[in-house]
Image: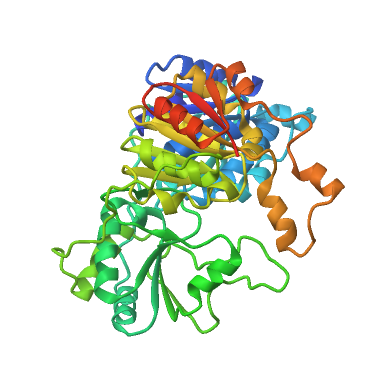
Length: 516
């Protein structure tokens, strides 16, 4: 057995059986070791941003990490943007980066780089393996850190000679995972006192608090105390739809967020962060809260969020027999005529199948998706968490591998879709049940708005050349077909509804270019 074999055995002993990969020469012994492991599913991404984004989508839905395989520092650098999004979502990933053999580094070959410095900003843990015998221990530690609540990216640097070197240590056993910390009873008491007061209160949640059972308890707490329950603006995964608790997110637009919190006297955070603007704008606040608003973080760090929510309800004396507020199954009237983002959301409310997974990178076009889909079939909602665009297509790819029995629907802005369009090829190769809806407004619409928001004025000729996606116009149907994905174009609401209904009823990858 060599070091690469030991790495594979350690991953498999800890239930990590999917590896998203884009390997190179330094990783060939690990590739060969993976080839000897039929239990490991190896998924090729044609760009490292697809690899890291797919690992994020997989772990969000599987509730366990995948491994990635990247080629040296430049390969890692290509995947960093989606590792940033994964870090913001607290997604567990075991990120394996190959490197030159230890004795080759002193020669400063063209691909030599400082991998540690590249990895640390997007990782919760980084370690370079020093010998083949260290591989099992280091991999086990990477898994422990990745799965420590609330989740993290662990980056393991694998020099080529530690992969091909013989090992003398025994096969690994499963590691002992760190449990979530028990809730702080003093913080729970403070939260209960705050909720019993007559102050204007919001409960702001994220992470595991957005799962169905925890939301039901939180809804009972909100009904009993008069507090308003909300999710932070960007969340890794929400469970929503008919029969589930309807939860609004903090608005993205500064003015709307400030208005939302204008009368708020206290905020209780559960797995969330206090709301701030996505960017700074001249003359506008960075914090969305009034200066006098008190903030209590009730479940910081690695606290068991589900347990903390139940204990808070018990401390408040909230009966478990109280019916939480749940969304009824309903659909808005189907629009006709021009195809708009609103028409797309309404059509989805009609036709998305039960237990679909929505992967949202529609950016500005999809901001009203929630408004029309509270009563849609039950679904999971995954979104861009760190603001680094190019997430949507890979996220859907990973989610589809984690959930092969569920329809995965990607809401994809056309500009950001071009960052990782290669994910369509992976969806075709892996025969994934993905439906991609491209919001083809043929411009970076959000940046046209941001140009005005920062006080720089409307786009002139030069600015438009940097913000518009025409001359030539992107052909998403042609691009999808070239990568093995069937596709159709819709230019009216009626056309879109017909294509969507058909696409939701079939299996396999499909793309709709929605010209809005």
